[in-house]
Length: 509
Ligand code: AHR
Image 1: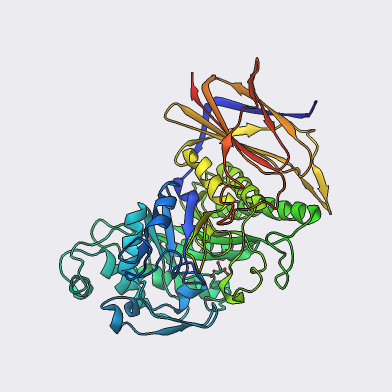
Image 2: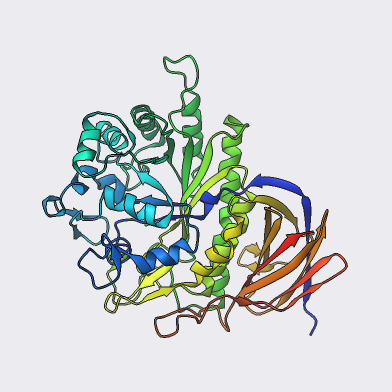
C-alpha cells in the first residue's frame, strides 16, 4: 500500500544547542496520591520501601534517568512551612492542604525524606520555596539548612536531625504561580518580591544557587518582560544583580474548558485533534517568551524553565476532585512526544521542563492502585524512556520541506508529522510522531553529512488512541521493536502507522 511520504532532512554534522537533560524533569506535589500513597507509603507499609519510600516506584523511575524532581508544589509550595516537616515524625504539626482536597497533611514527608528520595532516584532536587505565605527569612533558613557546611544555627538544627553533611541543592523556585495561587500578585509586585527573595537566598560554600523566578501563565508575555526588565534594574548597585538565573512558565494542554476539560479515556477524533492542536501551542509560547527574553538577554544567559506542563483532564469518575487523578492513554503519550520535539528545537533557551506530575496526578508516569498497591507504567512513561538518549545530546535540526499537508482543525492547521533528532557519543536518536488518527505515513529521513549504521527502531502505538494500561493489562501500550525501517539511497525510510510514536537509534558511521 502506498502511503504519504514525508521527507525530513537532517544534517548529521551540524550540531545545534545541547538539549539539557533537565527538560526531562519531573514534578511531585503534596497533592492527592502523588506523595502519600505514590512515592511515600511509610516505614510500616507491606510494600518494599526504604524509609517509607516505595522502591518499585524508585526502580521504575530510575530507568528513565530522571534528572531532577521539583517539590513540594505547585500551589502547595506557597502554603508549606518547611520547619513543620523536620524532626521526629510524631512531633511534626498537622496542617490542612487547602488547595488540594482540604485533607490533613501530617508532614511525615518533609525535607529529609525528599532528599532521600532524590538520592534514591539519582535526581537533582528542585525546591519551590514559599513566597505567597512565607517569609524571606524562612526561605533563607531553608537554603542554609540544606546547603551550608561548618557551623551555623541552621547547620546545628540539621545535625540535630541526623544529617551532618550539607546537601547540594542548586535549583530553587522563588514561589509558584505568583499571579494566581502563589499570592495573586501583579508582575510588578512579584518582581519586587523576587528581588528580595533572590537576595537573601544565598550561595553557601560551593553550592551555587540557580534561582527560578515564578514566571508567566501561558501567553502572558508582559509578565516575562517585567521580570526581564527587573534583572536589569540597577537600584543602588553598579551592575545588574543576578537575583534569579531563570524564569518559569506554566502551560497545560486542555482541549476543553477549565470547568469541563474533557475525559482522559472517553474521547472522539475531534477531541483528539483538538488536544494535539493545544499541545502544539507550546511551540508558539516558547517562541514568544524566548523572543521577549532575547530582547533583554541576547546572550541567552537567563534560562527559561517550563516547570509545569502536560495534559489536564477531568478526574476519573468517583475520585476526589481535589486529587487530580486521571488515566493516561496513547493520546497522552503522543502529547509528550510532541512536547519533546518542540523542547529539542528550543534547546538554546529552554533549560528545564517538568511534567506534571510523576505519580498518580495529572499526566503521570506511574499510576498506583489505592487498594492493591499495583503499579502501572503509563504510555507517557514509555515516551520518556524511549527518548532518554536525547538528554544532554547535541540537537540536530530537522527540516520538513514546505508543502507537506497538515490537517485542518477548526481554524488551526495541525502538522501531523513531528520529528526531532540529536547526537551524542557517536550515536544518533531520531524521534518521530504520526499524529494523524487514521492515516499512516512514511518518513523519508534524508541524512546528510554522515551515515547511520546498526539501526534499531522501536514503536509505541495501539489499535486506538484511547488505549491505556491497567493492572490487568499493563502492557496494552508498551514499546515494541519496529521492523518497518528500510535503508534508502539518502538514508532511511520509516513507516509510521496512524497515532504512533517511533524512535530510531543508530551509530554514526
Ligand atoms: O499541577 C497542579 C497545579 O497546577 C499546581 O499546583 C499549580 O502550580 C498549577 O496551577
